[in-house]
Image 1 (cartoon, rainbow, N blue to C red):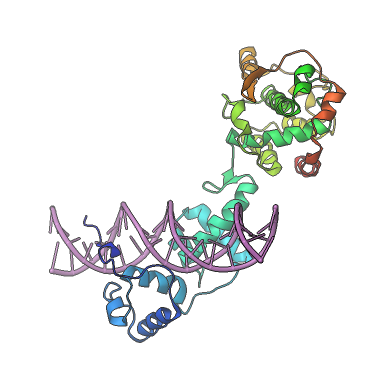
Image 2 (image 1 turned 90 degrees about the horizontal axis):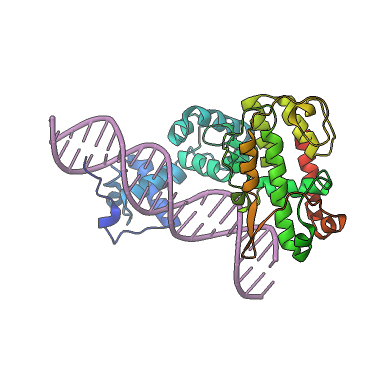
Length: 318
DNA sequence: AATTCAGACAACCGCGTGGGA
DNA sequence: CTCCCACGCGGTTGTCTGAAT
């Protein structure tokens, strides 16, 4: 198929933002004659633009039936519904929203709605809960917050001397360790393993996302794999709510009762443990296995700035 | 007051497709 | 049937503006 000769070969043509007088010329011409052939229109209307640019300007801005201003909640809902039905077919979606252009809807989607969905833990492409463990990039923050609850303080096994030597490194290592604990807690429940078993813990520390995303991870996992009691127990445990119904089946610290056989094999658990090494300040440290962390060390970690997030986290997970 | 940064939106670019010659 | 043109679409980039530092 032949390509449309675009405006590229007409280098003298103006590009960029439209001037009011250009708008006026275009508007007057189209209202008088209709647009006809967009390719011929610029010459006829006395515009130094390519037809494509004129068409875009007319359809996205100058058309008299264009509705400007904020999208209403109804419109937003409709966009959401239609997008779940048609995907990124912006023109199809726009056809159901009188006065809105495909470009406007696309922009609104990309700048507002997409982010909203992501924050809610929903994949904007599929409109389904995000089940990928890439969400675990939120874990450091979450787990640091969990640490302030002291839930792990007595069971942590990080070498305290190492930690005290460098508070920043210690913080990092503790977070890593907490990640491990959380992953273990999830994977030793009588549930199928999470979708991405070969979790690279190092990758979790790329960027600190938000706690809502983490909570959604739990809920996604719940909805995908069932086992509400178990995950609720994990959540309760991390939010300091103590043992909840079903905690026993997760083998959580402090839980009682007979736990069903874990779905995760010993070798898998060992694999997770073996991944618990990290580079701090250029050196690679491995968390030792048996020394409990001291209260002083906890105090030195300065994790209290996460209190606000923790409150949100508690609310969400309940 | 100056600078930096992020969000919002306008505009552009390149490709696919339909239809006429 | 093939070629070419014009249009429309979706993705991407550019620009502006206001908030934050």
